[in-house]
Image 1: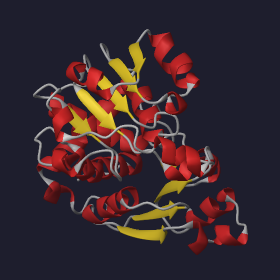
Image 2: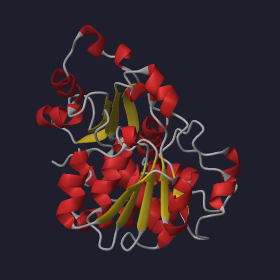
Image 3: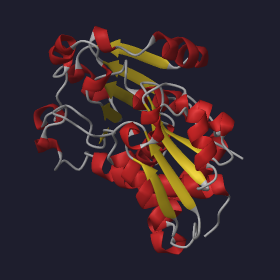
Length: 305
């Protein structure tokens, strides 16, 4: 039995195979509409989510399966003090596979230790978000035709942004990757990402403060919001929340084939005027999230169309 807890749980070859399956699903979704018939997905969301939870549900329904679960800790027995270990033991009696989002780092890993069904990490605190990473990889590969030999700009909240941490870990396995890390000093990428992932692989990177100066060099710009829910101090959030705002004017500095990604939701870090730019890939990215999660469910359950 396999779980997906971190972005490196699948080998490079397995990741490519999963992305190939996601591409095949995107090309002909109807061919997979019975793949998970009579299978049930449990969505265990201990913190709010729109895209991730609904894309998991859409993925399972598109495969012909069904969905059960909860959308907040308040509506589960966690409100009564039930542990993650006990919850997953019970859910294992009801469902065939589970997707868990939790504010505590490591909670999905702990759930996997006690589970009798595959567990998918749908985001744990400021730690990791591997299914968003697979979505990002699919979007980059479809836009650029490859995952190696790219300059990737990551902008905004690089400290608490679990999507950023997971994506950097995943992309570090492809040759010729270069990272440009764009953030204020207070939100720079955690040291452990540099020392454990970037430096050992000899990956080129630079940390900069100016988005405008970085724009002309980028193949991909990955924007993130400054996450109010990760701050302990409201004053710090207010001071940093508008650090970077991508506008149509700034897009003029970028390559003609650069792609802009964003895990969503956005607040105001991407102006509405950018939405009409053909380089804006973030809503396409959201659609790809359904295909990736369909492919992941099939892979973990060993299903065929």
